[in-house]
Image (cartoon, rainbow, N blue to C red; front, top):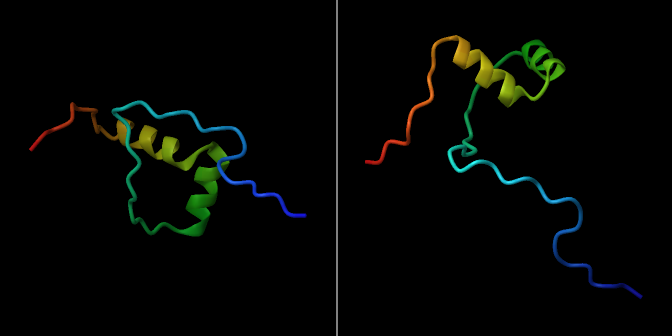
Length: 64
């Protein structure tokens, strides 16, 4: 007998702060570079730190 197990099962993800939003960025990098980023931790967080050190600053949302 098969039971219907609909809905989400498992641990829910934490909600992101409202000022952060997931955006897809199409970037081509070499495999060895991606492997090094993954070895250091979450690639998105590592790239964010690199961009901060390169001079990018957070700013308020710009409403058009």
